[in-house]
Image (cartoon, rainbow, N blue to C red; front, top):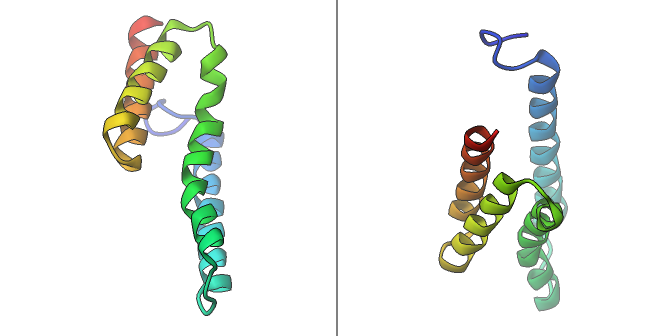
Length: 104
């Protein structure tokens, strides 16, 4: 345990490594494509990728039986209809955490 018993060291290591891999894939993609002109179709695919990742993360909640997850999903979907990607993700993460804590 670390951080006053709040998080196990393996969880923290996992988070740090996931962040590093995410950053590395962004940098490699940038370096590989920086001197190339992408077609309109390729640009469209690249712009759709974050939404596809978000859907793949929240899709299991559509079949969840946990009321906290279902409520967080509804809040996230409502936010997605009104806000851009970053606020929607933040609202989804915060609402899931708060609701899981409150309804546990």
